[in-house]
Length: 269
Image (cartoon, rainbow, N blue to C red; front, side, top):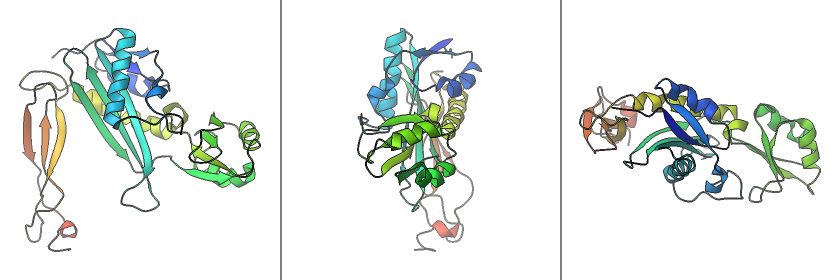
């Protein structure tokens, strides 16, 4: 297995601070590509993302490769919204993708953040906004101000009270305030990307036992872990599927143990 000494990073938002240190342990230096990653989608209403998170990250990585002439590229993509199962709880999703332009191989790490600094509030004055600002740890986390949730913003990246007050004064009535989810404006998100980059570096360090390409690791899971009380298969993972995204070799590994009866469709229908 041979890893490159340089790889292109597609970012406008300082993600090299989180991604470069783990990659450097593999001898890889990141070259930040001069591309407009906002063209692939924004967290506000100006540019909707086209396709899935993986497709957006791949498009950024390929654009970074094209801009630098390097063979390998890396990019991340995030998404934030309400948790699908837990009411009044936000959920962050993050994808970090490594792309080899010569072979077409993607190595992808994913994570979910159940405690993202993702919030919004309506306010007409700084005083009305203060509980929200305290909650999100402003000004360390920046704020976006827009006329409404569906309108392009008045301003992004607000990190001081004077600018916030001036921006709110532009509106008639209440404005829509939200946390700025761009990585360089949201320390919580940057920390999640850093953890994901550590996982990606660890994965790239493991070669495929068949073709020796980098990136052997967990690809999927199969459900069916048996109930510890009655042995009925549950929806919990019973097998981890490790594999190589270059040659397609996989290894299906059983998970030890049994499921709590609380997850059993027979014991807890």
